[in-house]
Image (cartoon, rainbow, N blue to C red; front, side, top):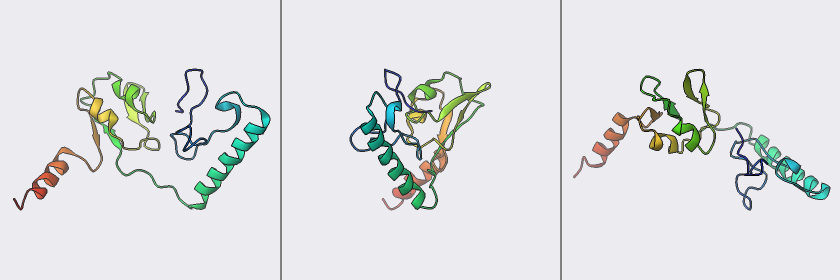
Amino acid sequence: GLSRSPDGFLMEAHAKLRPVDTMIDGVFLCGTAQGPKDIPDSVAQAKGAAASAIALMSRGALEVEPYQAEIDQSICGMCGICVSICPFNAIVKSGEAYVVDKSLCKGCGACAAACPSGAIKFSHFTDMQLLAQVKAAFAGW
């Protein structure tokens, strides 16, 4: 589930802004998992990861993104484009079907936009709901 660099090391969410965070909430990097480092750098990074973990735990509860992808298995063509396009590695093949890992999905919509069969929809963003929003927006015109 974690992104890797071309060299096979684990990648951070952003090298400058989030150097110990991964794209998965609650998973932090430190030490040589991210690349070759000496001991002082590894210890400093471990302190940063520990601080991030403490900040996360002090919130009391984690919020899960309410808008998540859902795959309609009846029209899924099993092409796998959604797996390759998802930046959060939230779609995996399980047996003979692709499924969305709800703990990883951030609701970005990349998979739905790339799906050639239109099998991926979002909770709270069905075609009928979007059409109702458009009608409501233009009701006064």
